[in-house]
Amino acid sequence: MSDFTNGFWPWYVAAISLVSILACALLLWLAGKATVKVQAGQSNDNTTGHVWDGDLRELNNPLPRWWMWLFILTVVFALGYLAIFPGLGSFKGLLNWSADSEHSQDVTQFRAEVAPLYAGFSAQPVEALVKDARALAVGERLFMNNCAQCHGSDARGSKSYPNLTNANTAWLGERSAAHIVQTVTNGRTGVMPPMAEAVGGEAQMSELANYVLSLSGSPHNEIKAFSGKARFSACAACHGIDGKGNKTLGAPNLTDDYWLHGWGEAAIVNMIKNGKTNVMPAQAPKLTADQIHVVAAYVLSLSGSSFPAPAATPKP
Ligand code: HEC
Ligand code: HEC
Image 1: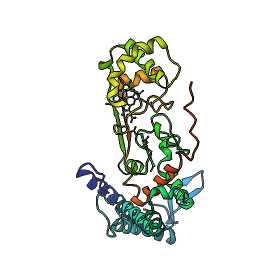
Image 2: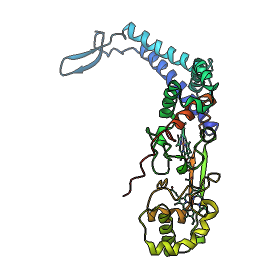
Image 3: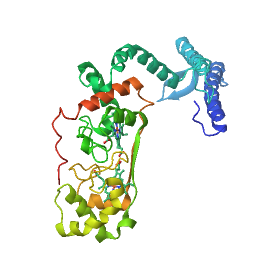
């Protein structure tokens, strides 16, 4: 327990825990000692003197033994627990146990158990594993557990999360084992700067957006596209003069029908105006190099020449 933001709180929490437990013990002790005063003129009939509903008298019997022992055991258990486990402020407990270390022990043990399985996979290049049904089954499970939340369980992604079943031309980088392993290991950050200043006002951005739509043969306004063409020079440094993108820069191909950040004039104008910083977090802390090797094979198996081209993003 080291989540406290200053030195006072651990002591405060520890004090409250200890005082509460000791107060329980004290209560038991005092209750055991208390005696009922016999009023003058009354016989000691072993009642507390409290009477309800006319004749219902409260007896002054001692607490049942079993109950008392249970109470004492509870207090002893509480003190024992706080001595052994982390519970008293920032005291780590005599066993030095923590949920974190137990978890990492479990993970280490699990990785040791599956190491022989992965060793067989790691001996082969990713491209060879694409034909290994067992590797693909393991890779699929890794994908479901670690990637599906962003890329979808069918790996077809969603807005801003790339479709990994696309053909190479629609990828931000090369659809290769090296690119997938590198992306999964280190994550990636795609950055398009806001370009409004380079392009001009709303009218100019709308024209340019129509030109971009024309590149993929998407429905567009011919006249606007014609006027927008000259402005594409501001984009060509990254997206290429022909708009086919640049995989080294991660600038997508604008001539295909795949729209990572949304289709249509409004979405493109929005990209020009605001740019985009799109982040995939590094997965290396969660996955071993062996696991990344196998999940890469699974991803690689999802697309490519042996697979039919995916359906284009549905148009509104
Ligand atoms: C938290 C969300 C998230 C998770 C989890 C995630 N990704 Fe990604 N991934 C992204 C985003 C966002 C991008 C696009 C980054 C960009 O625009 O440059 C991306 C990009 C990629 C790319 C590059 C695609 C291309 O077109 O070049 C690959 C390959 C990839 N992810 C594979 C995986 C695999 C395999 C896993 C699981 C081990 C995974 N991702 C887990 C969000 C995620
Ligand atoms: C500095 C490089 C750079 C420049 C200049 C640039 N872009 Fe981009 N653009 C990118 C990158 C990188 C991405 C992908 C961001 C990501 O990883 O998600 C992108 C994404 C896009 C997309 C989204 C594509 C999709 O599939 O949804 C559009 C549209 C776009 N850019 C249009 C333009 C236009 C129009 C211009 C010129 C005004 C322009 N870009 C200038 C780097 C650039």
